[in-house]
Image (tube, rainbow, N blue to C red; front, side, top):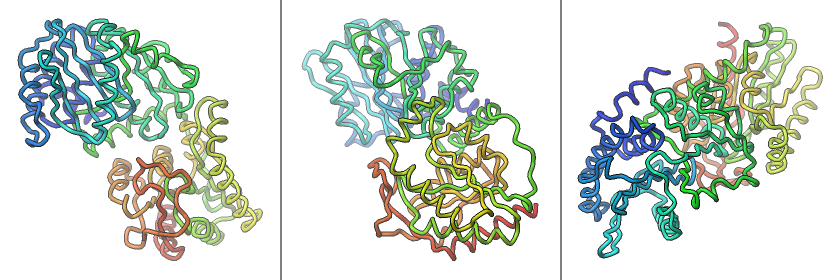
Length: 474
């Protein structure tokens, strides 16, 4: 395990932390831990929870006295049940039910954590803390309580389903790495099992030995899988989210290196080296889903044309949208994003028409992450949008450059800083663009959602070409 991750977990119970992420992390450990380890994590949960409550501003702390009383007076022996009711990969929700029926809920998101309890004598709800999905979370919590969730519970180590079902390849990959980190570090309850959606199986979680140790992984069709729906009536824990107490970029980089290591081992040795003067292999990607670079078609083509001065043949390894390890699920993905696949293939054909026999294009659209890394390992250089595309090349140990919408420069520079083979270009020459070039899929949750940006072909060439020729001279 990465030394950063090992240190983060080993220090968790005694860290003295008061942050929302530390509280979310100890909640994750508590609800996955075997019975013998729960005293340690419950005491840590109480201590970190009390410090977190004390750190809150007064306008977020109306329920602080009642919640502090619960934490101060409740030992592990007082707890009858723990149950997790997560809603998605960034949301975790732990219900703690005492022997006397009194309860506390800890509900966390990527930008905060709230705690709530109820005074049984007055029926008043007491809340402290905040996050951006407060109202929908409260609605779900109260609905499940009204539907007698607590009458179905099964102690402090209930049947627990770890569900991997996020549609964003990076988020899903990092989530798997976090679960693998917990599984490698702690004694996990035997009631914990792993369930991977076929639709989001961008790689097989079993490439992490720690995931495989939980027993057979179930690969499910989300349309025909009813365990989440049934879980409310069965008292089953639903776990989709996992947090570490240190949510820094260094920790995120360590998690992505864990993913790289697992994928690299699965991908196998790279293909035989090819002299770039004979056949230059470039990994590149088009950006249409969330955002769009307005000049990308012509700017990339200008780079490809110029490579005629340094190589006899050019092979473009064109990324395309990531598929899954299941061909039928990848086919459904291609149907869902048919407009993007069609556009990418049409652009590839215009490049073939412009470059003739000089170019070969290998299209990776619809392939899973391991297959993409395997196909990219022999590339000499990459030029790709920051995010999943650049990460694929970096996990394949390819050197190159990435770029993005200007509002996201800082985010992506931090997200990918754990991989020294790549660097952000065109910081000063990228402009926000207001034309009709926005992302095909206008996701509300995406940074700069549905927006486009401009990098002129000249500005792009001015930074790509020196980086490419420097790489080839090494």
